[in-house]
Length: 309
Length: 190
Image (tube, rainbow over all chains, first blue to last red; front, side):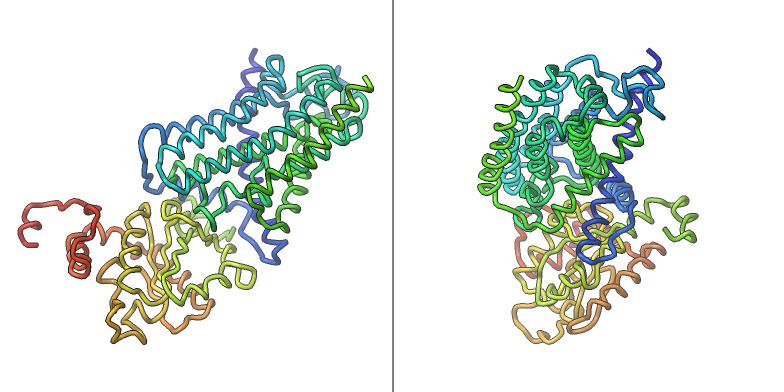
């Protein structure tokens, strides 16, 4: 019981620290690819301190509630995702420790699928309350983009669930640690998931939701001050959740937190390298892309998995 | 991080964060905006100093007025400035906002921008080079350090007179005052 409480406190803290670090890392990586020096890695912390102490302009209760709900949704999602560790008996792996996943026994992938949509919907709620036309365009784009990447994402999840015969992420992770990683056992699904990763993270080439040059940063157009600070943290945690899920499903999680976080950084770096060199696409191109290649690959893998069972 | 500044960070983190996280509202008011893309992109890379361009006034705290200010633009400038959350800093860029510059006898541009909104710093030149922007930013840091970049305080204190200047130009502004007048005596004098 005590370990479980400690884990419930520890998981969001790890997510928070790593999320802020990922935000700083992404700015540096993109700067170096642009042949700039880039900001220091702690720049997001400076921004958050500054925003926390700025005057915050509110547009009503729903506007504030959207921020709180989005942040709460992201933090709760973290509790359902294993952040390293193993269920195997002690001594089978060097430097291994118990599974760091406070709510591993309940829900699993199905809950994560629902909770991952909670953040975007809450932001849509708050942005809608601000009655800014740019925010409305951003919200409609966000919903369309979610429609675009949810189709291949659900097919990927379905293929994995039918391959491993379970909905528990902890079970999937331990099965991968025993035999081959998901990248090797469900390869086409892994490729499909990597192709829609930028869309799920909201980075280029699919950053059309918060495009500053087109629609004045979209749903965030009216957010400032400490609302924006909380939404920055929420964005970071959402990025961490998506990449952690990818690592758990395809790269075998990690036997301890350190190897898990190293894999998270590797996947994040790969996604950022793709995003730094590509231009932004329009929403119809994003839909067309997501519904052809990733959907096709995920569907093919699902058929192969079901037939070969 | 500069180790000499560690004590300052511990003493007043808010002030230091205000200094090193200047998010500029890119509102293209005149010809001077052409000097800003080189400043924020690969050639001069203002992001080194935490300066970033943001798209909406709600998220920014640095307002650069780049180049001449026509009457129509001034109205938008005032609205944008009033939408920005405190603390906010304004920098006028180029000769035109200082004294009219080469448009000193134009019928449609204003000569002294600081009659209408408070200005914290000026960057003179026609055009100032991107290096001048960085020198201006380091001067702004000094001003924030000494507590002299207090344009937003001056605006709330002397709002009646700023508003009077704005209304002299436009007649009715079309939006309610940002700070409703404090005392009836002030009202009577106006």
